[in-house]
Length: 235
Image 1: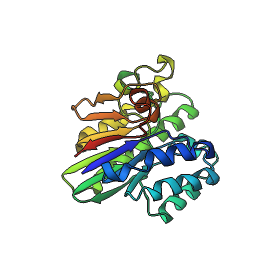
Image 2 (image 1 turned 120 degrees about the vertical axis):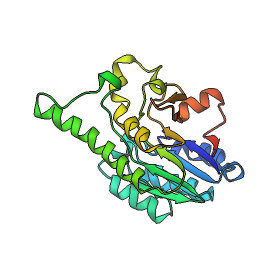
Image 3 (image 1 turned 30 degrees about the vertical axis):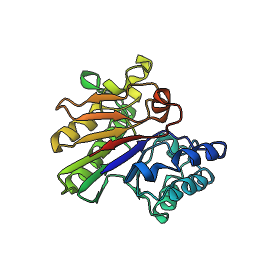
């Protein structure tokens, strides 16, 4: 299977023509399209509608997770319904299998990496924050437990490893992801992880168990090849 993956489109009407051109040929190079969050810029349905036009016209089966920008206006449920109605598989603690390849996904959350992971100690506000991070890790756990395919791909918005956020200001590392997600991936096993969110991070990393992690934020992809809107992987 060939998988075209991208993230952080931050779609607005002004980007419609450019993305339409860039996605016009995705069917020639990929069997599945993965969008790893931040599809919209402000989480508005009127941003999603023209983006759906671009994605549906590509005529490629599409797998999606939402990102923080898609939550900005509190209309994430409506955005999800719109995508599902268009035949797009939206993963939110859920799994999807196609042609022997399993996809497990959720948005993920923040919290830091390794010894720097924030723990639930102190004020109730800190405990609530940490619980949100734990809840997303549990959603990924449920999604991965559903998979029966031997080949497994994890789709997140937030990073599960520190390696792919290197290049961003160190002060914001804890807000770019959490290794709680990587712990789940390592426990269940996967062939690779795809994520976005770290616009100025690194494209490659690995979990502690050695599972490849790929940051497919469109800004990174276009820094390598300005005309490209996605990266293609062979599974």
